[in-house]
Image (spheres, rainbow, N blue to C red):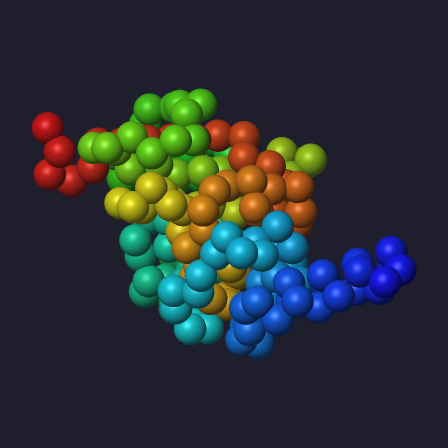
Length: 171
């Protein structure tokens, strides 16, 4: 068997290892590094975005621009999509301590800021109780993923800030 044939056979068997649903294929098309390290945890839902999801909010889409029903921006926060403004939103919810540690720390909840090369926030992920991360992909699906690296270096940029707070019920 020639080298090309072996590569094709390996690729075909790897592709057949898991059958993805259409919305999962969309996630993979945007973030190829997700392959094998994520699972879908919700259906398509345009009511909330990743910023809301990271805060546990599923009733509003956070937007600094739109002032219509269904959109939300907290009072007292500058109406700008910047790291400092959004950091204030998280501070209102107790996320005030910065950390460089991406690992799971029992008793803490963490938020990751994904920022592009223009220093504009593009995505927010939250670490959940099992140590994995959870993300809302735009208005599409929510996913659970093994690490933050699987979403980096693409449309979301890179993680430039991690915030943490004490988990509810921890001492």
